[in-house]
Length: 364
Image 1 (cartoon, one colour):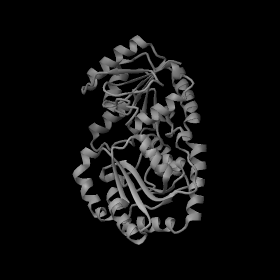
Image 2 (cartoon, one colour):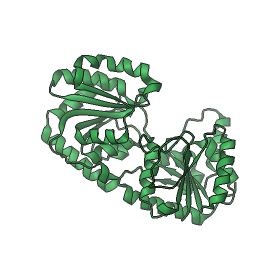
Image 3 (cartoon, helix red, strand yellow):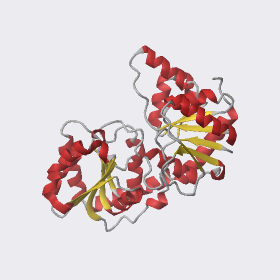
Image 4 (cartoon, helix red, strand yellow):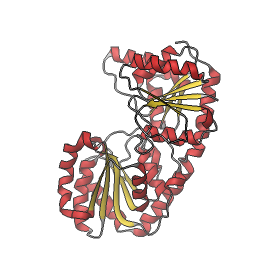
């Protein structure tokens, strides 16, 4: 089946520093039965590798102009289905142009709030122009169905997945290392984590921390303020700015514990399944889709009162129980390899695409 996958504005499909959306698209695309019939539309300006067919376009900020440009390429490619990722304004503009083609929207975030009646109406009308809506977690699908029950038959949960074979590493002989990887943004929980690490590293002087912070330039001033109390630990704390994906993978494969202290409702939590697959024990806030990503295999610390203190205590609990920590890491790895591997999820996506293709295009 010929499928065109349209990435959101700003996505260059960079093989070295991919966004989380690009990571999912690449993992599922490489294992699709239709891999040779896929075309990924992204923006110019990056090294993309040769595994998947890409079509790079010039950046265009106007949703309507971007839709017109992409629609011209789609007319030439003549796909059976178009899959648009994430950016609602440009996705809706494109769907309205492709009146005879099935178009599905792959949603990587939870639904935004629509406070006033005009916004609620606009969101409702936009949701109805797609033949299918795919969500990266059951949490996202349920939220959509609750808001738009008339579109229940067009809503499918397609949890994120990774090539677990690339991430899997032996559980034993882990370094006494606490790891974090995520955007250097307040909602990712860097502030409470840094506060917790001060007490933990004081109490356990043989342990270290390694923090891989993405989107560094945008949040630099704020992040440096959170990191300042850790400076006194010297080389016991490593801070990596915008680390490539292979560096993060190697970090997780060495770390005894990975902490995911998100303060917001994560749509899914790709970092959680990466940490589980790599063989680390995981401490998670359990927010949003994080609980779905980890199942029962993370030590959950909810971001309520005294969050930094409770994070610190959870870390000490795992540090002081090597056997329990290793058993927890092993169970989490088995779960990730069984439930979140890209080989199986790609087959699910292939079948879902066929289902929406066979249903035909909705009237737009």
